[in-house]
Length: 109
Image: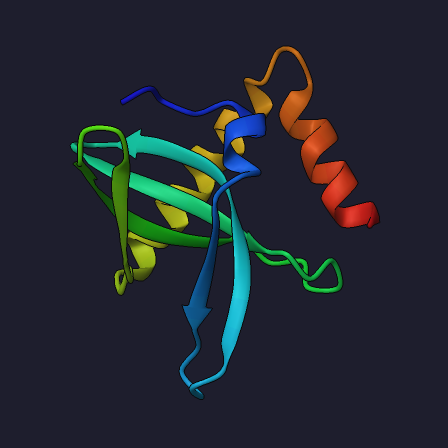
């Protein structure tokens, strides 16, 4: 697994998350990355009025032509803070500006 993925690929991954109150929110995967020995995903709501980034543990299973993704909640606040820092570093390392353009577009829409 690469440390991050192409923004064009991430734009194609949409998931529905169930919130604690039972409602659902549609989110787009903006980054998949490794930290330690585990994989994580950063998601943001497709509703442009919500400026949040959510982090989840990520399990991937290769099914031949397709890959099945399973998200898991992260309960450890320290780990969430570390993931946020790693995510920020990944975005800062973006030499070609694709992620900045993607995130700016998301926030402007």
